[in-house]
Length: 209
Image 1 (cartoon, rainbow, N blue to C red):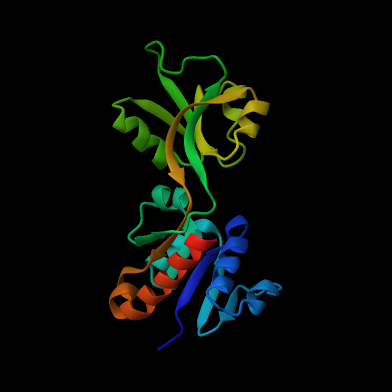
Image 2: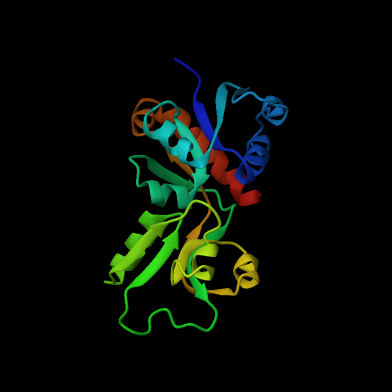
């Protein structure tokens, strides 16, 4: 049977994941000194480094058994994976934001909202019973209200400094975000003992760190 494969999100979550694995006694030297390699050994496991959206894909389709990815990516993807553990780091939040001092909800005109996360935005407004036109933006979503393309945005907010610098403010918070562990459904059935042991170790280490 092959090693358990763990997909990690490259970038800001990667460093915290390495710290967590070291805390449970794993040798992360190959992961720290990875060079350009994307599949790396870590004790009896293999670590795959990927973009956040690809972490979901690899786990959903069984190429990897586990993944660590932000809650934002999970809810936008709406995939067929188990979300089993909140690691408590990488904290930020989804929020609806718009120009300072403007009442987004006032009036009866069609509202246009720009977002990198159209599924999250759509679900948020559906819950409110509002018919809102969503425009998907790939880059700096804060530009959309400044250029008159949208009345507001739905985006990830950490400190709010980028919003303030562009004359925007949080209108309403949507949901908290943090790093989560996801598991392939088939892997959970076939390798339950191994996976539950790893999850238990990670949960204890996350509480300390």
